[in-house]
Image (cartoon, rainbow, N blue to C red; front, side, top):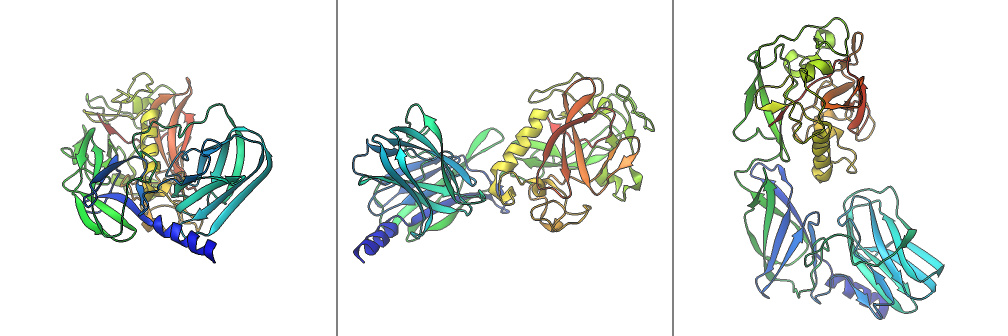
Length: 458
């Protein structure tokens, strides 16, 4: 009974957990670069640095809990933290013998244990996977010595497992550069329920750091604090200063801001380059002659599907580019360019980093980029064709326009987009979404094929 009471008391002392999220004035997600936390009652201040958006405060002032002979048994802060189902911890063992590792949730329930009877002295790398989001404690014990760290999981690693994966030459508190409590998600400063707190968020928008509104309140319990950014460019909205762009033929395209990138919201449907040079309508295939193809039988309006272009047409005789920005205007309007493979990676990496765009884990982002209609239907979890009304959280709106290869194929099945980056004389890199898949796939294909084109603002 005494042990149970002590455990409950310890967890209660640790249970004031604040989770921060950024939003604009119309509730779009704003990724936070840092959060400044001030205890106005006790006069201290802490800064959380991305990717940590969770802070634990305790009445005892204990963050990561480590007791007895710290030098003999040590745990690094897990990396990454927060994590999406899988993370790593370094464990230093000074003496041979039995070592046990236990993971408990914030309510004190044991979710996984690990026991090694003959672990040798040294620094061991532990791989941790957890199946449910939440705040957890990882505790190691050996001969009365104890070390513990707090971890914040926001994904699904498939199962709860602790595995020794190797030996680390040198013990580090963390492998990431640290400022005080950066990525640690806990403060050593004192806190009591009812203390008056102030929270301020910062985000990088178009290369500049901006400040959220200030939230000042008496903090009595754990909660999610929304930090609001007013009058800002945010995901899913038209790009500031360029809500639309017009091509040589007079077609008008809406724009969409996603992270630091400004994209055309619709596929290109122009038949002339910006210098007035016509693009031939294609009925044949070529690795060198530019063609556009009109998949009019797709059942998707031209304003949504756009034309399909072979790679020579998309590039307009420019050389392959892997740069950011690509510098290849190609079929795009003046002031815009065909994205390189690296720029597509900027997009997918950003979308993967935003929890609101993930379906289950950070790899499942296709739904966030796909349009809400037009896809073949399926019931598989997290795939584009299932529950299509929940698609397009980012505003990108990829349409399943299919492709051309000796004929028109697979409208409703997939969306394919050229990049400005070639693999060799015959193949170029592209990205595609498939109705029965949760991923955005990176691949290469024959340059004579007809794919959709999206453009990026210079």
